[in-house]
Every structure is written in structure tokens, then in C-alpha cells.
Image (cartoon, rainbow, N blue to C red; front, side, top):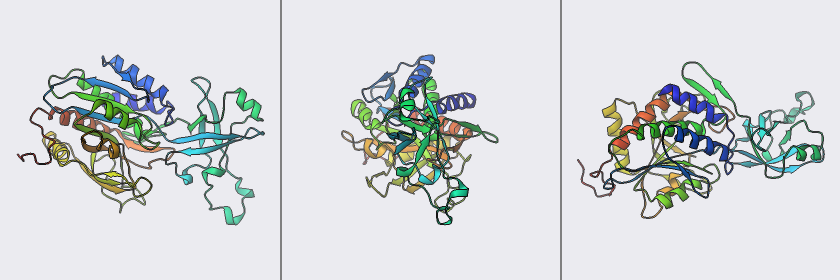
Length: 367
């Protein structure tokens, strides 16, 4: 399992897929599903859905993660060939300077660039520690004019992402440009692999969603169409075992998967997730019976698709499950394959424990 997780994660991280422009990622995942004998389909928004039919008396499950990544879009091409961009998603400005980027024109035609940084020798003392806002960022592709760059296929609206990169660290730890959430995609592929050979269990809709980084759009459309009773989102959990994070919680890289007991964005949408008690019980009890170490997260500043999926139709019993991640939304994020492997085992076991007797009613009888 771990070798497949590693292979799928690395392959998917090397495919650019800005939010709203996930086609390359979706096509590759569809091919992976096809290779394991799983049928998939795409909806109008670009979500990829693979349904595994099960017991009609058991509550149907939507297990989902997102395919997209954050980045930029071209806002203006200057006459000298330099490019101005707009941010798409929660790009932290202090992580931007001097990064290599890819302007996504088409497969085999993408344009390489670098985010310009003022020469240190020419930077006034009062500006040496100033973070440049995205509105002032300039991308240099090496082209000498607007006409040259346009001839290469770059236009206003062209997607721009951090240049796809994978760095294999010590042990089972991997750094990459879009661990969030190609790692989740790798996990769901492994769960789908298990579902192709299962006997019994609920109907499971495995969904690879779009536009999560752009205000959480894709999964809501899928949920409206599928009307699940249970929705399990797989996403990152903020690792707190690195400098500056130790007081934020107790989520350690390499210490196993986690569940979120509370998330709240705290700004903008003012949305979040308080998980359904039946789902918390399911994950806690299953982890204990399977001998899986389960971590817990409660964070402000975090927002997931389940914030909206939980209120679709008559409402779904939701929970956010995931894996510890260091340096979220940076050009290189870090995860541990051991956490992904244990998360996969946990998800497979939890789904297997959902039968006709599993109740999502708030006033269900306690065992």
C-alpha cells in the first residue's frame, strides 16, 4: 500500500491543476481508476465521481477530497514581457518571492517563469524586511516582449502555479508543491482500490472535487447530485510539531491520521464544521479496534468543503478526517507516508462499519 501511495502522490504532485483548471489532474486520476477496474464519470463542474454500489439499506457515503491547488492567474502582460498576476486561493505573500512558477498553457507547451525579487544590493534598508504584496508581484519568463509571450500562448487568465516539484526527505516524509491535497487524492485512490474487491458495505461515492481553493465550490455540486447521508472529507490537518505552531494544538507528523472536532474560518465566510457525533464515535471506535493511533484537531482559520456539504438537502452527517501537514499553502508542504497509510486503513475500516443499523439520527439509541 505504501509504495502505491508514494507513487500516486508523486505522480499527481507533478501535474499542475490550479483551482478551476483541474482537467489534467482529473484525466490522470480517471485513468488510474480505470486501471483498477473502477468506473468514473465527470460532472459539468469537473468533479470526478466513482460509485461503488452497496447495501441499499445502509446509509450512502460520500468520501471526497479536492484535486485543485492554489496559485495565481495572469492579470496583465506588460509590453516588456513581464507579467502581473492575481492571487487564486490562500497564497501567503511571504512565501512568494523568488519562487519558480509554471504558466499553464497546455501539456507540452507550459511556460516557465520566476517571481522577480528586487536585488538585495539595490534594496533600500527600509524595504529589506518588507513583504511584497501580490498586486505588485512580477513574473519573469525570459520573453522580451508582450508579443513574444502571447505567441507562446500566455494570455490574461492563464493559470500560474508553483513549478511542480517533489523532494523526498528522510524516511517516509515527502515535500511537494501540492501535497494539499494530492495526498488526499492518493489516499482515495487506495480506498477505491479496496472497494473494487469488497463484499458488502454501503454504497460509496468516491469524489475528487474541484475548486476547493476557490471558495469551496465543487463538492457542494456533487453532494446535491448524490444526496449522501454521510459525508467524509479527507484533507490536511495542521501539524503543530514545528516552530511557531506548538501552541496551536497536538498534531504530530508521523503520529497517525486525525479527525477535526472543530473548525472555524474566523473571517470572510465565517463558516466551519462541528462533526456529527455518530461520525466521531465511528472514527474513534474504529481506530481503537484497528489499533490505529488517532489524533485530534480543533482549529480556527481552517475551512473545508464539509462546511457547505453538511447543509445540502436534509443535511448530512459529516466529519473531516485527514493527515498532519507542515507548512500549509507554501510552495513546498511536508507530509509523512505512514500517516497516509494509516488514514487509508482507517477509512476502509470505517466504511466497512457502516451497515443498515448505523444511524445518523441525533436521537439514535446509544449502544
